[in-house]
Length: 383
Ligand SMILES: Cc1ncc(COP(=O)(O)O)c(C=O)c1O
Image (cartoon, rainbow, N blue to C red; front, top):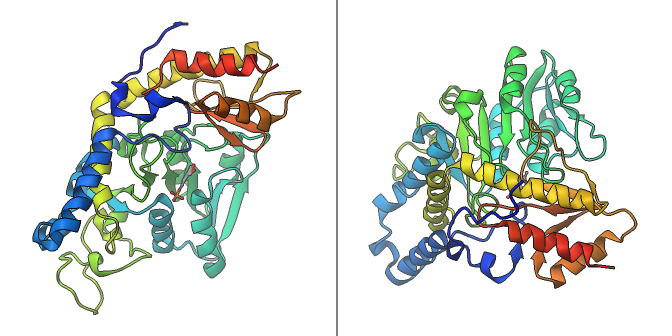
């Protein structure tokens, strides 16, 4: 186990990593500095020049660079990518598009972030589809419990690739197989994994995967991307439809839209366009850094956290086995008030998250071993 490890990238690209000990990527990441600059520049330009610069052509092609970079992230084609304002928005539009009917079911877990469940619940209220949630034991779910709920009436298996509360990581290739054996789709929320865990969406057989920018992808709030397998992108009618739903967005009319023959049919209206360019920059930076390297870097930090927490008598509640773990490490502190631990860390400038009865640590590429050591020192020095 190395006792020192430098950040994977220059920390001056991540200002907050210089002003405190930031181990909280699962909540919000400090934005990659060039991404923030691109966004600011875009807004200044529109504020000062309006459509003189951001003209019809610029608006029609505003997502091109984001499509390109997100395609690299998911090992897909730019035509497989849709941009939106949030994971929940994209998955909601998808849920209405798939619209699982009465007699069918959607399978997820009872500890997933709502983005994997609520969009389907809302459609189920309308169609009578059954929502089946695998129950967690503690904070994690035995994969067999999900497998056992899938049957020939399953329309969708909806999983959060890495669970927000426990860091449990699902084997997407295995669950794509299970879903497909029953004629179901695998729909994935990758908000807690994209940027930190390699995702080869076509290679894994995933049918749809969406991720927001502001966590591991080091981008802003207010923008997200979704990969859609081509077999869906060309046949689904999106749940949300607007002027951008036309092949030619400037062919503005009210008769039924002529949808693009690709995933961009899920882009439907104006949004905070300036965020798209910033998000493209942060994704490009992470992919250039190499997501496999980021994954390996974060695992070394997580290992050190796990060892240090265990040594001080904390109960690590996130999975430790290689197949299920991620960079999220969660722990209980028997005999201590958990909010005291959280408060103490915060006062010492160590930023982590309090999630129910656990503290959630989530190191990323700008962290070094000394950050982990600082967190451990602060906790063990509490008495
Ligand atoms: C797994 C997961 N999905 C999605 C989100 C957020 O989704 P949205 O930005 O659509 O609210 C979070 C936020 O914590 C999350 O942990």
